[in-house]
Image (cartoon, rainbow, N blue to C red):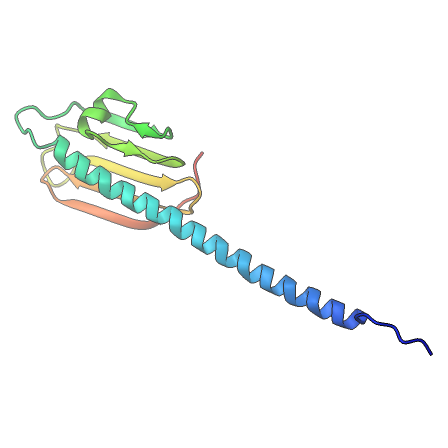
Length: 149
């Protein structure tokens, strides 16, 4: 009888199954962390945009011009000149879809004077900020949606 050294087929299959289970758990966790990070970027961007817009609206005698609904997918400063005047010094992060609209003629609580929306291209949620004509505002979080078009 020969004395053979090595692993049996059952031992090898057990190790492969355990590695497969651990890999599956790791990939699931990675997806959750990636989505959470994308949402954090979107949330920070909308907060920065909110602050930037309040800075752009400080001069009541000379409000910024109207901004028709405009979406930007390009990293960096605002491409639309009217949006750049409404949102001074606003920088769009990479892989982010940013939408803005503004109506300076809206002065009552029943209409939306400004809307900001941010979605990270690798996330499955977006955030929206709405400012009403009377100065009240609404912040909507965790709205369902998928990446960038």
